[in-house]
Length: 175
Ligand code: 2AM
Image (cartoon, rainbow, N blue to C red):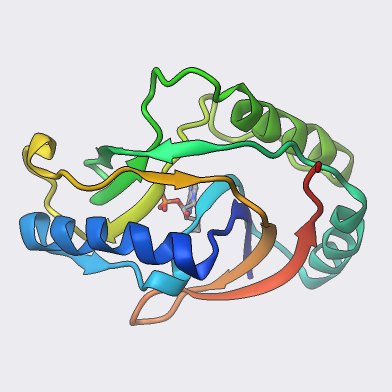
């Protein structure tokens, strides 16, 4: 099973992101993320053996991650991966807590044998997969305010219709 940690939106927040996904789908095609699977990955760990999954699912419940607020309003894409996403603006102020959460998570992970894989953290919520991203300035919508309340350790199993996600554990957030 592949593992990742992600901030998981409430159903209400996910419902406010969903219109962005619909509009993106009309513009760029591909496969829309289902509303209940929308998330912001903080750390992707990749394929992991069951023993390590169990140890991590137990250990991470004793961690603490920063909490804060952001506004999702800037569309972006990973053209080669054919992903279209929505993120906080790259230059938005007051996002330090989010980058600190990412840093702290990788520090917690080091004793478990994981090192940061991507050099740069690009906070985003994927909207489409297998898309053909075009002019992103056409993708507009209502900004979505989001103060994440949950950080989840997720197991992902690839399937023909898209990955199946299992929530394995929850990392407490700072009050
Ligand atoms: P993405 O949405 O930008 O594709 C589960 O696959 C989650 O982990 C997704 O949110 C995905 O980001 C993220 N992820 C980060 N790096 C990944 C990688 N190398 N392979 C698969 N997923 C990755």
